[in-house]
Length: 289
Image 1 (cartoon, rainbow, N blue to C red):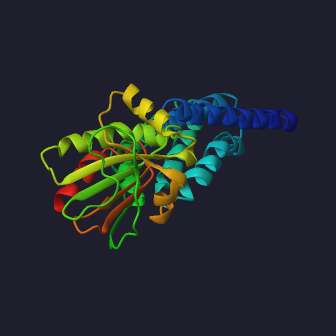
Image 2: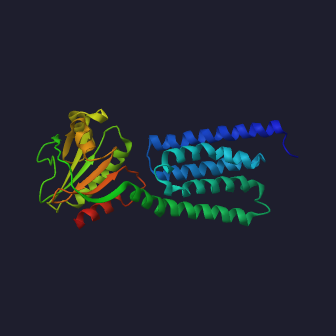
Image 3: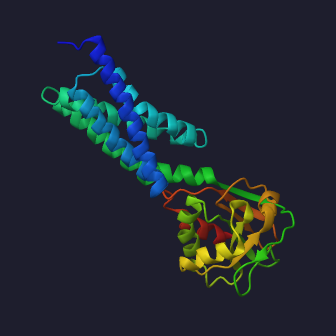
């Protein structure tokens, strides 16, 4: 027997509430532990599948399935797709997960093969998206190869030893603008330090990590923050964010590479832990200069 209209709308409200709860779970996990796009995708897919199973057991209509994924999709579109439209397969895969969940109970006995095929497609699609597609699209979105003159700037040394405070003729300089309150910056830091370690034999390539008082940092706080993470890296400070702005950058983390003539050869703004080739790509590019 079909459910009464009042009962159906209760289920729809429950579906929307479940969707909001899923939104809090998925993005709360991302904010608390990692901004890794693969983690966001995986948790979201598992959640909407399980929510679909629950709704399917209650024999709800298709509109309830839309409501359960709507909050997740809306935030993903607003926060991610507006910046990187190529990541649209994430939304498609979440939709497939919701459909598979909805059909799991209702069609398992009569159309088991179809449900298994749908779940297999979801698994394969998610593996392709997380393992290859998303990392590549993120790297392409964040990185810009250039060959242009750079405005003059000078940084304030923070750590001990020889600190590059600006481009020097005959040397490649890699500057990473950083903030101790920026989660993507902190996630990127070990990979940036590892790239520097890979090039220790290349004496003409210098790295420097730069913070600014715009991010509510001070030289002392910045130095202490890096030392507490046991990372050995030349540190400098950009007072007022003047160098950052003068170089045409808009946020952090932001990497900029200067060649041996002082020209800008690469800029990179943003970071996501899903970028599995970040270290390799940066090292490979620097070796071509």
